[in-house]
Image (cartoon, rainbow, N blue to C red; front, top):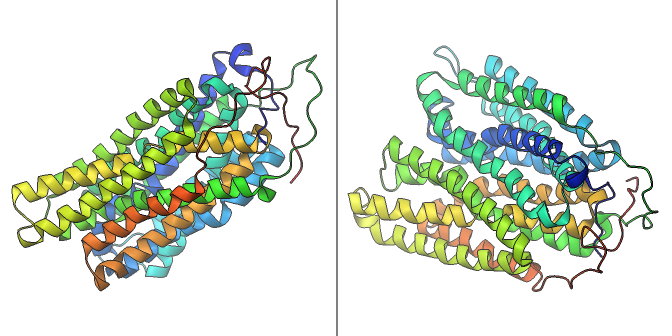
Length: 435
């Protein structure tokens, strides 16, 4: 059963401040995404600077995702218990401190190279602390926006992920090559600190107005809802193909088709910018048509086709990988696959939060993001082994097959229209329940 927001109708009561709250969510997610999605774009420099082999590189990058996966659900429960503001500000401040520590103590220099485990521990700590932004900012969007706008608002918030990743892809490889990893971590710390400052200024609870009708009985926890678990698991599985591109596309393009640094940077930036446009457009389109579930299934099917085409292209050009035609065709297919595999996020998170109810959105989003970042941990670990045992085309084909695996978990039809008279499209609201 779905429940509407337990909060008032802030979209009409405070029309301007809701956009400030959304801006805080975008800034927080962009800052963390610049680390989570931007650091993998420095893979070839991290491999050289820290003197790692591919398996060690995959472990280090994967542990960042594991840190998020392990603590997303606790952060979500804390958000539902204490509210968006304290969780978001605490998490951003702690992430800033962790990145500042890495900038001073976990960077390779001419005289010494940090151990793999120091690097891995630092990245995992960033993941543990930075994961706080996901559930907290998502719950704030559910509180401040009504049902007819939540798809657009959540999709705008989700554009922060490719926005931050795009900024990271644009700046971090250059910084790693010319200024070192001290500058990389320092810039990321500055971004998280700036987002924390915006949150301190703008983020607040919309409050409860006088005269609000009694609310429905407490909703059961999403942790006991099999439908929410299926949706969360589907989101996690569908993210793995995207993570395959974010973590190892630069290595693939460099090692397999001998692409230049300019091509590597251009591909990653276009993937992130294309995902931003696709997320906003899909959120607005599905808000108008009410077809979120059908859209998710279509994205999964199309993504599989594109990854299969990428695998075929990689297999075809293996004899002459560094020709201009091979570089262009492979890079173009990789870009298209990356955009399609990222376009659906805002729609999926909106559908999940609506299914769980706004009072429990933090927990539900924490469940989903635990699955998502478990994929970010496992994907970089798996790819080097698949490539070593078979080939890069096989790795892309396996990534695409994840989309097919998620299809049985996605519901086929949207729920029936809700009762008239409910502003959010749902008859009554759920009262927050203590975890």
